[in-house]
Amino acid sequence: MQVPTSVEPGLDFVVTATLIVADIKRSTAFYRDVLGAQVLWLTINVGGGPTDDKPEVTATPPQHPNDLSFFLNLRVNDIARFHERWRSSGATFITEPKKHASELRCYMRDPDGYLIEVGQTTVTAGPFDLYQ
Image 1: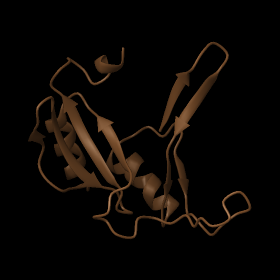
Image 2: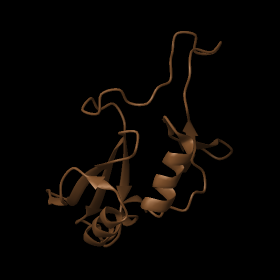
Image 3: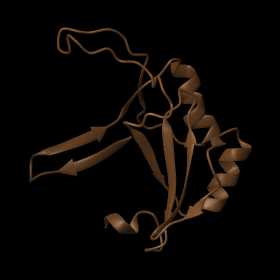
Image 4: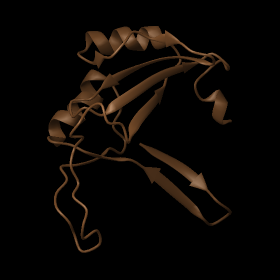
């Protein structure tokens, strides 16, 4: 996931999220083949022990699926269709899409247990209209 951002002219940067996973091929296949994402830039790493620039940090996939410290958020234009397509392709959802104040949303997990929120805004016509 990458988001181009500019603080001021000449100070551009990209925000990415790195998923620490047990099996890179399995995770890439999930996002590409189950969800149907076009992989432009997917930062996935099998993790590992400390390094000289993070001497006390170990990178590891989620150990307890009900402890949440990070989740992906996918904004879609038709949650019912995406939910059905992804469910029939093998994605496991926690619940069906539910109505909330300004959105419809549901959650699924990827093969390593990362939580993925799928949401459809009810405030604007499309998912990107909020950011323009």
